[in-house]
Length: 99
View 1 (cartoon, rainbow, N blue to C red):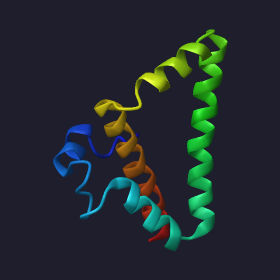
View 2: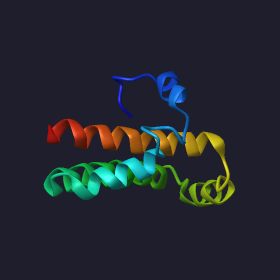
View 3: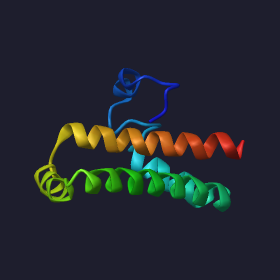
């Protein structure tokens, strides 16, 4: 998550109001038109972070808990907000490198 903008500032926009679109739709629009090498590098960073987090959970014997938590949080406002923040950060990382 970016440290440049605090979480409280993201909440000002709301989940459906990032330049008039959702953070997800903004990301996909930018990703289609941005330099593909930059997009691929940023996606690789996200997957690497996910792989590290999964390994940490596995090493602690928590992989079953992860699956249970994923099932439980299908509808979860905090997870939705965190997901939106990740899309915002990813979009920002791509846009700043394409300028």
